[in-house]
Amino acid sequence: MDFNTARFNMVQQQIRPWDVFDPQILELFATIPREQFVPQDFQQLAFSDTFLPIGHNQVIFPPKLTGRILQSLNLRKEHSVLEIGTGTGYLTALLSQLAKRVTTIEIIPELAKEALQNLKSLNLHNITLLIGDGLQTCTNEDRYDVIILTGSLPILPKILREQLSINGKLFAVIGKSPAMSALLLTRINKEYWREKILFETELPPLLYSSKKPGFQF
Image: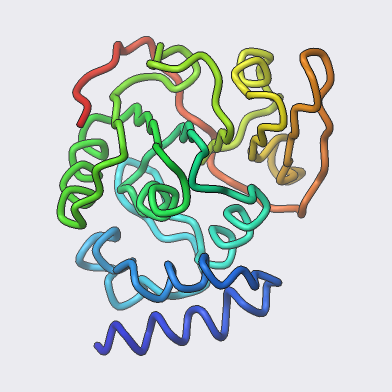
């Protein structure tokens, strides 16, 4: 399979038609090897417009969904990012190229180790990867400019709202199947947050546990 051509077609036929026009984001999709972040048995489908299984009942987002998420967050090089749910690290890799630093938390140790290998293979050095429950794990920062949840929640916990910096943005999919909405939350000041529904979608639920943080790099 010609992966370079497949990446080009993914950008032109899936991501652009879903109103993702930011040239920096499109360039990242065209260069970061998405095929390395899916199981080998699914590499032929790595660029398809669908959720793909990555093991442990988890999935990798369709490319166009990932693109819309990134564009809505308006990431800048001075931003600090918290990602809850690393998976195999594809979104993490994209985020690391758009922000100053990324803290990512994965609850499934096997996926975290796989993500670590994937990210190290691309020589990405502005990422801290922790094993644990993203809603409970303490990190090195009190506030983040951007927070992303890669699994759905029935409601958004207050703790995540409080972890946003002023003018910070949070992306989450909120609700219960079949009625889920992609929510963009912006913190306006200490006591006020603005909410915007971007689109309707469905995601597997975010997993919970009481595991403590593990390794980082």
